[in-house]
View: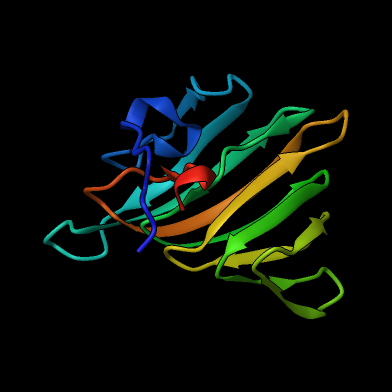
Length: 160
């Protein structure tokens, strides 16, 4: 079993903002100061509030590398603007290119995702994204996460 070296509180990572109602909220990533997370809509699919469903717009600044992390549930994303360099560290992600081509990105593989490409990140898959360009990236994301956990759990690759 891999060690999770750091589990950041909700305030430390752009992915970690939680909207407790359907109002839009934004937070600046205090970890990298270069990612914004705007919750466009959110809600609890069941009355027990164990999971939260969110629609989010991420904006990733130029020349930004996100930390290696995993999520406590499924997340799907679509590139609206820019080119995201995406690397799978452990597990696999499903990609659908804008032209309809379907790909599986496996452990150790990196792909360039461009406008119209979409991505499915299963729970527990370890990965990171990077903006290697001089322009911002905008991603639309839907997620179904465990409500009592951070949106992103950072992984220290040295302790895996």
